Image (cartoon, rainbow, N blue to C red; front, side, top):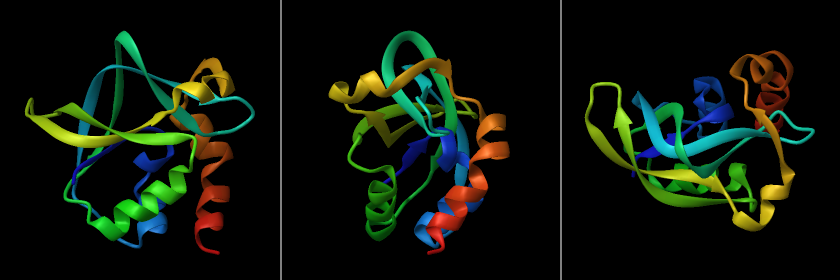
Length: 132
């Protein structure tokens, strides 16, 4: 299965720490969604949102064991949805994407997620947590 990620799992070091593997990846865009910061966390959450797009990464051919590890990392606040992603080369790819569950949306801030803020303030902590 292909997996579209935005937010922290776009960092190749983190996906490797979560799964123990390196995957072939392509840049992609998910139409009809937006990504926001979770209040008081560096994590991001994607939700359906008309007329918006989310830039991210599509990891190709993720095996079932790695998928289970990504599911566990994402936690119960998220559910994996089937989506179609526009790859950088213009090809359309089927993938799973992690979206915040509807009943959890109150945890979102109004701020869009920032890759730079996450890298500078939260990435090391998340990598350390995965190595335990």
